[in-house]
Image: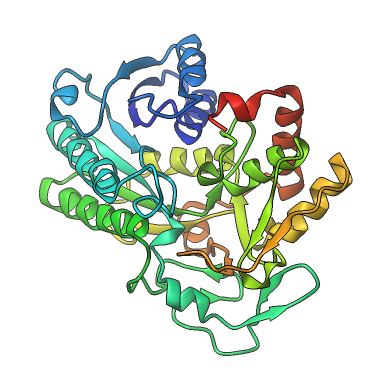
Length: 355
């Protein structure tokens, strides 16, 4: 089998390469990346050692796709990952749409030309912010918890948020580009008869993830805590009780392996994919974990609310469990320990990843 991966030098793209090569024999991988992020060059060297055909190119440029080798499947792992993209300094709203939408059209044209299937890595942030903020929550000592004793809206269960949950605006500029990407990808697949799988991923986290907040809160928090960098509990009373779940890329690779091997041509195409309740943790709980490993380092309380922040978001995997017999295998403790070990082995990691 031949795979084409966009954003191949990013944390997710490069991690998927390593895991998929372990899972499949006779697998050939090529990929494209513009190397715009700090740290990407390190991954390019590692990919070449694994025999990957790396192409330095920009998804926004149609000419960069002209001579790409054909593949059986494309995995789109390229996007600006920050929910604040387009509204914070340093990344304009026009750039966000060019990266996340214009680039996708070139990927879809590639799939159309080569009759390649597509796995689109979407985001849990396609869900309605007002709807998420209206979920019934109870508050314990260190975290918000979903109160399933009260009525839950469509798409929300005791296990978390599923694909049927509201995507009504506002969902952030970033979320809107990912939701639009899903629709465009499904339309292309129907119009030109190639398979499309869409995985709305929760927070992806693991060793080697760049130590910036937009790349992933768990890696950022652990690296910053270890180095005694300033940390803040932003909004929600400044107590750090907001909760997300974490998914290791190795677990994601197992799902993608099953999706690209699947011969199903109808039925559900969009899935919620995350660590689930068993891998959910608040910032306060994460701080307590770090305190035990590295010594106490207290974040500052910042009561000011921040655009697009939410108090609780955990993915309900029941649909993907049913259709692909998949569920996360790497527990939160192992995932955090892997990040911490990597941080300890690489004392300059924040500097190397752009902090």
